[in-house]
Image (cartoon, rainbow, N blue to C red; front, top):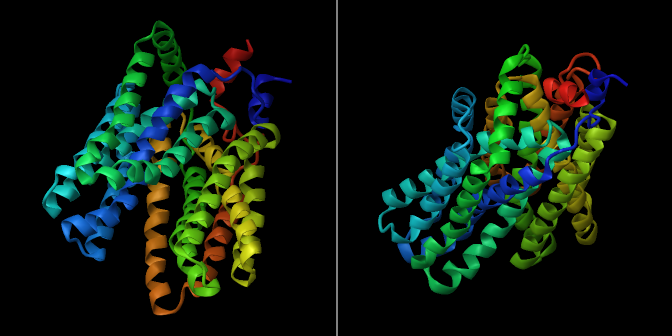
Length: 411
């Protein structure tokens, strides 16, 4: 099998560098912990700062926009500078912004602190994803290790708030910055090592020697598919607790367990989906994860409570199964612009999906939560239609790994 053929099928011509990925995965967990912590802070902020529900929710929206929508701009910066220190700088800024919340006595100061934290997250992701993609040799499996770090961080964020602010009050918020500061130190140590320096020099040559032609139109369709799946994901996060309470008479605890189940299944889906993509093809995973996802979303309002839990676990698995694959395909579509590709697939697509899902909240208020849930399959159908239009593996090097790495590693 030729190197080009191996690339097209997603086979691994060179082993991924797990040792190099682990620090970035850990830092990803610490960066996304700062995002997962923000919603969990709202009850305390409302109680201790006298915020209304609307003003508190606006803080989350501001942090989300700062951390996601502006990521492509930082991605462009990352590509032009090729400056690895952006990753540790970003995670440290994210932690410091969150840690300052407890000392912000005015609403404006709170908004600035959370916006700064969000900007740190936005600064971290493109460069960290670019370097994780290098260490993973452009494979979906390698990117999945990095992506799962983010899943873990989101899940740990509320727990971190409970163990710090929940026990000691808002003045304990600097404790929330400690993981991010540790992660920044870990990345600095990694980047200063001789092995990392040699790898960076080698990969800079791969990134810029023969970057190839950017394929913007397939990349735009890929981004549209990612937005469609993200709408479904954030819509479920917003509506499921309320739906379970109103439809089945459950408690808030049951709704929280349902969301935790979905998120945990999503982390597993990221790992399994990436392995399937490298083995059987990336476009195949994008398509065949979205088909059953759409069916389950359509059936969910008709299911009983036990079946709903099973369906939510399957939905979480399926919605995240193509995530790492989407990032890797995006990087391959924009060779030489992997920071920009990461900023859009990691940041902008998620931010847009979250904003659309927030808009569905207006529909839920005007009609019912069940009606809002019934709209979600329409968004995954759009994602499926867009995924079907992507070039098949083998038609070009689009779905493959970064070609120079694969060819030279195959020697």
